[in-house]
Length: 89
Image 1 (cartoon, rainbow, N blue to C red):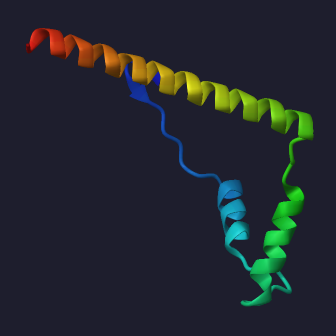
Image 2: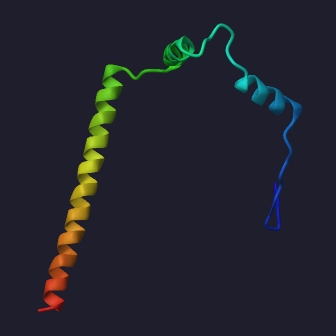
């Protein structure tokens, strides 16, 4: 893949071009006003929603990490404030 620091670059294939053109084509039956809502509902049906237990445990993990980060930042800030007060008396 990489030889002596050079990166291999490939050009798009015909399959890539077909996939890209299909993605930009309008959906059959969608209108300008009602198509957005219908497409949004269709996309929301494809979402894999977390279970209640997974949502709870991941929320606790996020809250814990944010709290620990805030405590670490506060501790560093207080230390440097104390150190500055000792140096600049």
